[in-house]
Image: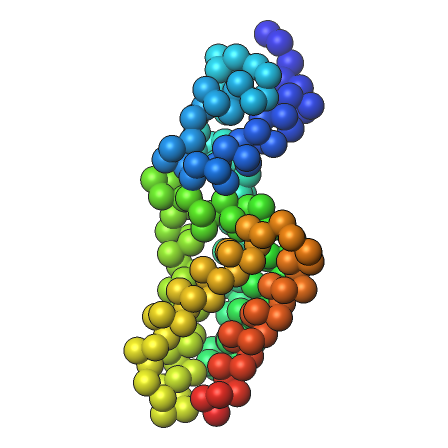
Length: 182
């Protein structure tokens, strides 16, 4: 039996990241990933038993950090909003590629629920902040969607310093909303 090589595994991961970001999970092709990694499809399956396992290898660290984020959420709405702001900043800095992979095409995977959960947590937090301050909570849904969409748009951009722009955007959308409704 041949030993699996770390260098080959890294080539597969690099190729898969590009493929999943470009096509999303459903349209990504193991054949295309193998070709890009300069290997046969059969050899690729020696490293990863299926496409979802390969997808999980890419977003696994982000997935673990999101589980931790959900476990450590404060109860108070404004504190929760600030916690989410800080967490989103860290996640997009530490896991930019994985964040885009998760939010850009996890449909058809067990990880799709994670992206939906993050949106739901943000929506519910915004709703609680709005209710607490006597504002219309219905705007929480489009605002949460705008935050996720806007952050993804910034992260997809390869021009300039996207970390600073993402931080400014998150501050504008999340900190300023708390100030606007107070």
